[in-house]
Length: 292
Ligand code: UTP
Image (cartoon, rainbow, N blue to C red):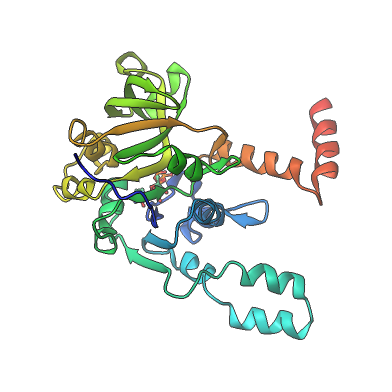
């Protein structure tokens, strides 16, 4: 019987995409640095990983993404400025964004050839162990966080976080062919990227959280192009069916597709309404706006 390492210590954050749906902003700001309220998307993703017990953070970046690298480092000038002004609250806030020395790596995906290619670019940081993959532009509000829920329900093999979508929306997601339901998990018998509603095997859609076995990298190495002529992570996961257990986990929480304008705006509205400082004023303003 195959032995599985239980502990998931590393997470890959693919942040090498072009973010064309947010042009012109993403001409010079990485999509993952767009803020929901006062925190960039990538911070929510890292917070979720830390909560799930992740100790090593591997970012797959691209050209124009150096803001992400700087964000997780010290900002010496700003820190000394805040120290001089005795602004300890903000000093503490920015110091908390600095990840532990040696726990963070950055690798360039020289060309954005697809999510599968981005994950493959991180291969040399992963030894023979399972790894989490977190897409920062999928912001998931959940308690406990989505990755923690997944790890708690994971028992080896590959796993994807899923949610049910409307039939008309299947062409925006990877869609699974469901098998047996085992407690909170659904066996994955097949997975297809962005099927038209009439071809979709279900309406159970993959969102941007994965736990993958090292063998997935072997298939990614073949660099096969799939939907939209991109190297798709779901295709390599599909190649593992029958070799390793593969489950979907319907997480409990709300997911905002912050790679789209509507998802990003909904996330901002939701977080603003719940915010201690501005929530009430924003609620009043929004209510009166909607009345007129
Ligand atoms: P998207 O499909 O949203 O693509 O990627 P994108 O390029 O970021 O955005 P659009 O479609 O042009 O607006 C999903 C995730 O995969 C990463 C992205 O950074 C995002 O987190 N990704 C995608 C890569 O890291 N590299 C790629 O080649 C493609």
